[in-house]
Image (cartoon, rainbow, N blue to C red; front, side, top):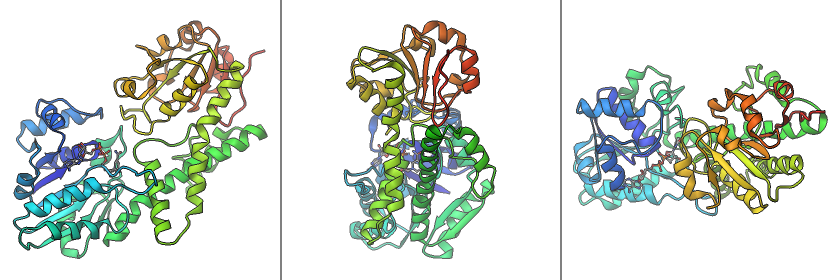
Length: 436
Ligand code: NAD
């Protein structure tokens, strides 16, 4: 099939690469000329395991190409995916200006029947809006259909998730249009849900909001464990083995960040409000999430008897492991606040430091390894659960630190092991380990 994917970011680039890998002819479009130039030169704009190999292979085989020319790409394609950003406005409402701009251009370029697929995360009703914008910008009336096909990939495992999604959601106006998407996805042999457009749009927000609920729920339970002397790790395991609950997303810590959960939860609250429903449950989820950063900073302040003039080694900057994405990363908020309280920061992240540098206070120090970050610090603070931090030589870390204090915002280590290694260890929802 001839496909074009508009927006060559985390979602668009991965989607385009995977569709090409399945044997389709794919044109990836972006209005960021530097990004398109870099991709043509074989440089990936994002860090994503397995992406570069897949892009290189498909470009080499002539099935994948990059362009800034949306109009030409639309004319060449049967199916057009919209995968541009849908950032939040200050009110929590979703900013649909990128989607609308693309829809207008698609309308202007449309010369024959096309299927336009919304892959961006958009509030319920946006499919209708896209249809209306395209129609308004057509130079002559041409038939087309709009489909909703929300994306569920996770950064850090985006290729794997796109090749083996747990479900493919197709919201289409009729069975015939749905079949175009079914045919496209058929080689993946994964479960498909075929529904109407509004339901598909809601499925995406309901899923992300539910996962955010799980995170805030376990963080609230962690608060109870801390005062009650219970261990939230054991509690989460005991809950998660119940198949009705499941073990995933029951990791207590600094709470959710990233480019999706915060904005999607806010957007659903806003959309519900617009329809006259006050989504109190989600407002509480957001509030609990906001309390996580001050909570972890409070742990560090208490452990060190204040933060003024203290040096803190920070492990992890990306919003989660295996990505260089810094959008809404908790580290930004944590480090800004630590700075404001007079602490000095020595930070290390395996891949996100280049993206983090312009976003952090200029005084932030960047280090070449976790050991360097620990060197001479009064405490080590874990902000992202990168796997390499699990396997550090902790004796070397202890020797590098000025004081053997770890504040673990992601519960990466076993308290008992930290005790044996001679650390003072503070983690979430578990008893602190204080030597002596
Ligand atoms: P992104 O910011 O990485 O990529 C968006 C791309 O669109 C950018 O490269 C930008 O230059 C391009 N763009 C913007 N306006 C354009 C225009 N008029 N013409 C051509 N290109 C244009 O965003 P992303 O993370 O890939 O997210 C895209 C959508 O997918 C969002 O709605 C997001 O909520 C959703 N989503 C993201 C993820 C994720 O993990 N990142 C997962 C599921 C869904």
